[in-house]
Length: 78
Image 1 (cartoon, one colour):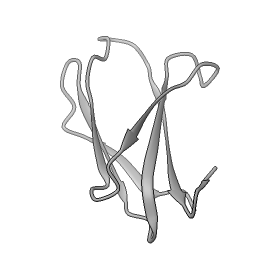
Image 2: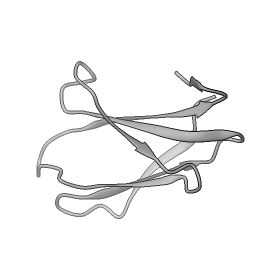
Image 3: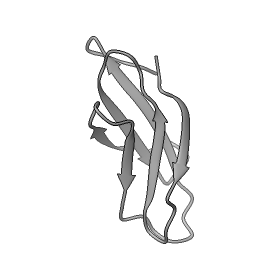
Image 4: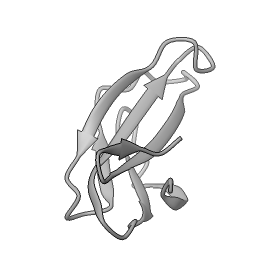
């Protein structure tokens, strides 16, 4: 099951924080970022103990797409 209620907080010039509802049994979260509508994604693994990730190094005036998935029982949610 993918995380629900993903929101963006603490928006600054080149940083932001993604926050989501924790998934029961998740061993990790994968956060993917794209600047071209999802054609190319870069990912980071977030600590399962917290349902947030600070995203740094963003470029001003650039639209981003983020996708948050959970890993439960070795399976990544879609």
